Length: 121
View 1 (spheres, rainbow, N blue to C red):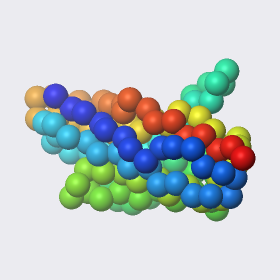
View 2 (cartoon, one colour):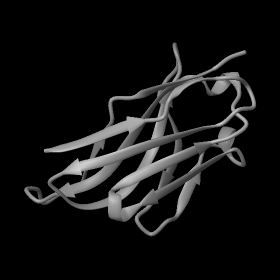
View 3 (cartoon, rainbow, N blue to C red):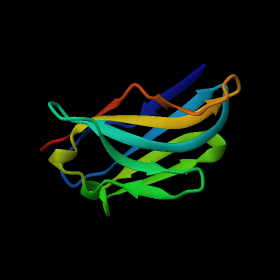
View 4 (cartoon, rainbow, N blue to C red):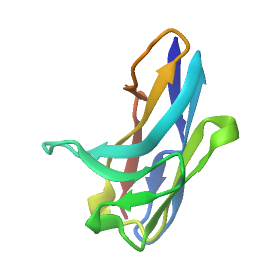
């Protein structure tokens, strides 16, 4: 019923930038929060950034000042602009959307399939 499709990952050198996109599609009634998590090898999944429907944002301390989250509500799409990338940013990045479908009465979170970001010289 609902799909989240991510794009924009890849291999970059330290100091470079990447922009991730995540588009939600399907029987979507309304989207509340959207955001990004990441998981590095051997580590737990951690919140990178989130944004509410009204545009309020939240960032992990490790990415503040370097990453910027935004969304296009008309396109049901969330973006993550990542600047000044560091090797420790290497991880699989997952987007999520907390939403309600036309066939549901409660909000729940849906997840993308993940996109690999590798920062290495």
